[in-house]
Length: 114
Length: 116
Image (cartoon, rainbow over all chains, first blue to last red; front, top):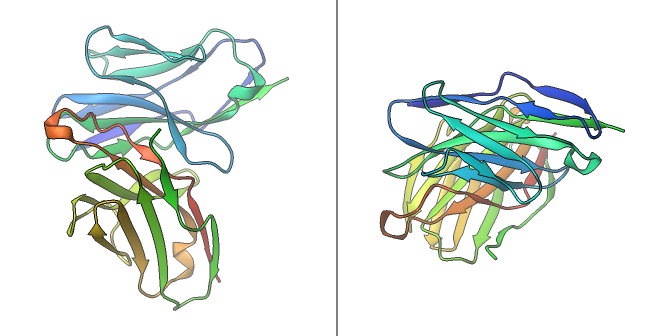
């Protein structure tokens, strides 16, 4: 069984300030790691993913996340947020084998304040 | 681009009605999923299917059933809707491709169901 914990349900941050959204997971097997973003009244879309190789992965819009195996974490960071980053962010894990069932965290709402 | 289409964005039904939520994907993905999204609870897996006519229960299957008669289509059925099934329902698909898939999900826009 696997689980994902996002401790912060809401994170308010001023525009152009840095932000970190925390994600910790537990699993008895090797996993793939994902961050998805959901804008209001839309479905989820992939923001970035860790499959293998470099532990630091980046998105095209300035977000990055680092896989830390010893701490079982995959925190999401951005050095300077924009109003358009206001959304809900979900961390997720999937098994590397089998049906690749995906387990999601409870989500973190990022509110960027002008 | 992968497209996952959910038939209805908004539905309002009465308690006891039978409800069908349809989902179609156009990328020949083997896996399809139905999730339920509620504030503070994140996404919870209702059912998934890894092949035509195959289905597996997720974490909260009670009160739901599914049908997958064709590879591209996965339907969620509420046999007798109840008010506690008022929620956002999200369909997703992913590819397996001989074991090289990663579990990356492609989502539809969601169907917001209100049961009165």
